Every structure is written in structure tokens, then in C-alpha cells.
Image (tube, rainbow, N blue to C red):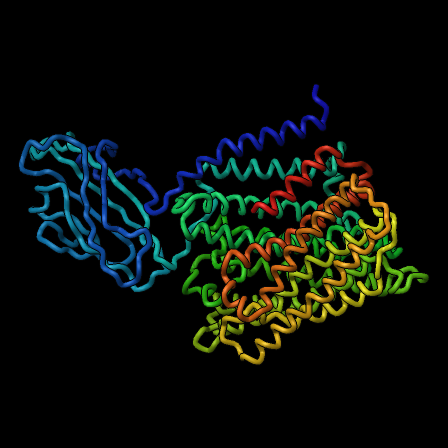
Length: 632
């Protein structure tokens, strides 16, 4: 009988194999017409549809423009040989727009188009479709064709078939990336869940998991348990975000790829960004902070244990709500920045954006509660002999992080509530006619720019714990680092508008923001030099995996920082905004955070779980991660 550990590995391997076997099926995703389906009908010509009769309709666009007219060529092939005067007929019905007969072979009857007596003598027809006045809807067509032998007596020898398809408007909801009616998608989602479950089991690896243990984890308020729950949940959301990034890469692999439609691609891009930034990387900081901060400052637990548990479950519920759009007609597809007016009900009528907004509200409530909890814990629950300047560096970086969160997340909450109000209640906060689009940009980037430092600071704190440990030397310039991080925290909430240089904001304001963006590189430069200065006259042990990850992160962070300096220039930003340069800069910056966080996992894993991670697999992990970030 296999040991439990080998069973876990075998199960994960089988799930991964199944996932890889099914993934190529996704290449058959249609780019326009959704495909045929058979309905019962036209029983006077035969009792069942005949697949030898192949309906065809040409002239339809992949996506339609409102108010346009399209000439449609309807025909079919197959069926009995014509032996009499009649050849066939058709019936076309569409639920959006109107059909117009353009010759005497077609007539309009009860909002559908069908052949006339003259048209019964042919197997090809033309008709005009005038699209609806709105292009944010999906038109559904049903085409029925009859292939007859023309003997006027034996209808049972005639054959028929039906074709159903949809054509979306250019601004219509794209549909769901995950089709729950498709068995392959259900198996793929199930395989991903099995892989995630095995990751959690391998990390935790506890044999005696039963009902009592389950109740404990669902009701715990212990800071260590909450930290582990945050860790597992953020890993799950990370896997989801990475899966979406793989879909994006598959679509971009070759030009004119039809692996996904444009709308589905937008879903993947939107949810990849939202999941990775808001539901994966940011909460990962709370995972380690919940576990380590009370231990580092000598507190018995967080200041408000029940509030801590509420924060976690609100975060999980928010993430599930935001991602549920995949199963309800399509997730948010407006970009992870949720720019107005794309988020209005006029342009994105589906439930995806509304569900994402509801998920964000829950996340922000979770984060706000956690920040208050950490502030009180750090400032009021330290042991009496520990002053602020004696706190460990990781606790200091978490203090800066939660202060930033407490400033910027409530601003995002107000913006999201106004966005949902525009969609659900018809308010006009972000109406473009009153410059609402610019207001959304100001509020979002007031949150979005400091959010980069929210995810960066905990990673730097981990690096400043790891480096002194493995180079056997105190952190160089500790006070300089603290003052530098104080300045960086203040500046980060003042330079949001450098994301808006091309929006027509006041020229003087643009210059101020440009100078401020250049200045914020100074404190982070000091932190960078202090980390490197710690290596001076030291004896680093580069065989240790945590230090290897930190060294890799330092290199990646250097590239991200240098590429960011160019974007502080007005002239350069105008040229580079919206290009892959910006995407690369952003991912280099957050990539360094990811690598630092992985270093923290390897560093604190023995303390948290009481065992060491496999060294060989760890080095494979490091090199694959480091090379992967730089190659992509």
C-alpha cells in the first residue's frame, strides 16, 4: 500500500496529466458562429432532423455594428434529389434587429423570413438583416431548411435540419470564458482544484484531518491559523491568476490566433490582473504578517482576534464573488483598471462587472478591518521593553503597509460603490459628459499607484530579515532605511497622476507629478544600496535558498526600478504609455515582489510547519522562476 505522501503526489500527477490532455480541446473555441444544434420540428417533412442536410448562411459579421444592414446568403446542401417542381424552403428567425425581403422569393411572416411560392423552387435565397440600434446585445438566429424531392406527395422522403447561432454586437458581453455546460471545462476546473488541494496538502501534510479539525479551521481566531488560511487562499488565487496568464499567452502565441475571441481574451486579461494584484499578492502579505508580527513583537495574538477571522472570510467571499462571473454569462472584461465608461451598463450589460464590484467591496472591507487590527496590535500590544526603533524590520514594513492601505482602500471603496451605483441605480458619477471618466482615473490611481508599494514593502521586509541572517552581519543603515521608507510612503500617495500624463490634466500639475515620481526613486535607491551594503565584508552563504531568492529579487527589482525612472519623464511617458514597455516594467516590479515572497516562504517554512522543504526541488523552483520572469 502506498504511503500517504506518495498518494498525494500520484493524485496531483494524474490531475495534471488530465488537465494537459484536455487543454488542446480549447483550441477549437469558435471565433464567430457558435455552432449547430438540433431541434425537433418540421415533422411534416420527417420526424427527426437529418444531418446530411447542411444549412449555410453567409454575409454575417463576426460582430455587428448598430444600425447597419447586412445582406445574408442562405442556402443548403444535401437531402433528396429533386424530382419535381419544388426544391426546398427555409425559415429564418432572429430576436434582435429586423429582416427585410429584397426579392419575390422571400417574404416576412410573423417577424421571421421564409420562402414564397416562387422561392420554393430554389435552394438559395438572399435577405437583408438590419441590426438593432444598440450594439451591446447578442442576436440569436434560428435557421430551418427543408430539402424536398418535389413530388408533392411523400413528405416523409423529404429532409430538414436546423442551425442555431449567435452574433454579438461589438460592445456586447463576451459570454463566459468557462462554459459550465461543456464537460471538458468542468473536468479542467476540477483538475485545477485537485492540483490546488494537493499543493495545500503537501505544504501542510497533516494525516488526522477529520470533522473536528474542519470545524476548528472554519471557526478559528488564532493568529497562526488565520495566517495559514491566508497563505492557502492566496496560493489558490495565485494558481487561478497564473492559469489565466497561460490562456493569455496561448492566445498571443501566434498572430491572428482564434484560440479565444476578443471578448474572452478581455475577460482573461481583466481577471488575471484583478486576481493577481488584489486577491493573490496583496493578501499574501497578511499570511506572513498574521503569523509572524505577533511573534516578533511579543503579543499573544492580534488585538481583535474575531475581527481577524472576519477579515479572512470576507476576503475569501469577495474573491469567489468576483470570480463567479466566469460561471454566470461572463466575467468582467473591461481591463483590470475598470476604466469608465467601459464599466457602464450600456457597454457591459452582463453581470461580470457588477459581480467584480461586489467582490471588491467585500475585499476592501476585509482589508480595512485588517489594517485597523494590525495598527492597534503593533502600536499597543508590543512587549513593554520594545520601542518602535527596536521593532524587527518586517514588522516595520508591515506598519508602513497597513498605513498605506488604510489611506487608499477606503478611497477605492467609494469609487467602486459609485461605479456599482452607476450600473445598478442609474447614477451618473462617472458619466463622460460631465468628465466622470477623469474622476474615475484620479480616484483609481490614487489607490493604484500606492498599491504597488503595498505589495512591495512586505517583500522588502522579508528581504531585510533574510539578508542579515545568511550574510552573518547586521543590516547596514537601518535608520536610513526607516527614514527612506517613511518618505517613500508619503510620496507614494502624492504621485498618482503620473499615470494620467496623456489625459489632458493641467500642465503645471503634470510637471509636479513628474518631479515627484523622480524623487520617489531616491528613498528606494537608498534601501537598495543598504541591502547591498550589508554584504560588505560579510560571509554570505549563497547555498541557502532564501538568500538565493532574495538575490534574484534584487536583480529583478533593479530592472523594474530603472525602467520606471524613464516613465517619470513626460516626453518618455507619452510615447511609452500603453506599450509592452509599460507591461514589462510593471511585471518586473511585481515579479521582484513575488520572488522575495518565495524567499520568505523558504525562510519561514521550517518555523511554521516544523520541516524543511526539499532542497533539490527548491533550486529547480528558483531557476525556473528567475528565468521565467525574465523570459516573459
